[in-house]
Length: 409
Image (cartoon, rainbow, N blue to C red; front, side, top):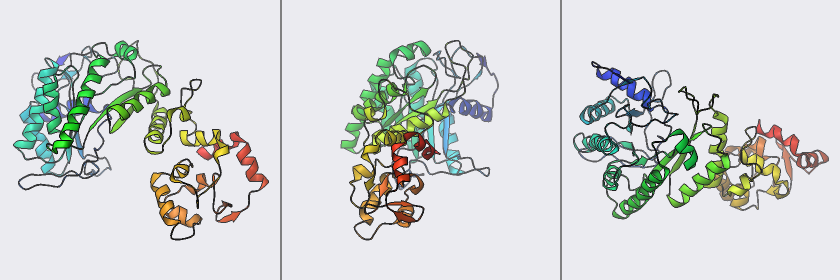
């Protein structure tokens, strides 16, 4: 561990922002809150109002650690205690002032605050709470704040943290106890799940009271993908459980990045495509009405990286198609590759007012080049801009599943 005796505020910001960049669970909360009298900042319904730098980078959210000191030795973390990196800490008054000044200069619209563990979890969490309470009370900051919770912190401290943040999160990191104990021996899954359960109950109470900031923001978590041999099926089973029982707003999937030299970890490129497929499957379960057993089987517990999971389901269930979009239910429309929740609802409204055609479908957001193989309009298929009756060519497309792989391009 390297401790800098003399370090200016800019060096601190560089070190602590770099230490926070691997945590992906910092997207918006869906909270909408207007500026209030004698306060500064507002939160859009997207959670954070984005600003952009001259080179196109999004710099709207100050994503930073309170400290990169840490007592834990997680194999996948750049800030683990055995790494020889420069360490520093921002005191609550320093960080609160920096956040406020960044906001005044229109650099940011919100704060994502995480931390390593300095001293003990309770002390660290109290310093983080002090930071955000200074922002809210001293600087009258009304913008978006996402606060990371530290496992093994008391319920009283967690409850206090929830009151000041729009969203809180505690990262599970890995989908089961065995994997977590192997790569993060200082963390206990039971402790993390207990905190998540407590957060759920506390937020429910705040919703009823309509007080403080986290009455709608909720909580989220992150799972690392590819650091252990855990299957996609196991990962999404856990996510589905958390959505149902803990009312999580999001589960974030983070492709493992090999940043440490550790024999417990695989030497591989970040599985970015696998991460993308997991997000797609996650959305199918949350917004499209799919069940896990429709996406996976015990014999095939991993998603096909060469084809998106919705199209893969369609190819396995060609008996379900084609469907007539002039008559199909919302549930059936959502099963069609190329039709999403918004466009499906628009189809239901539009077909009551006018005749549907290919141009109308394009205007409302249907990906026609994909959907055309699975739908009819008044019983007729179409190709390009011409409707036509089912032909031997179409019969061949629907009978030969291998040929459908071209649809994923």
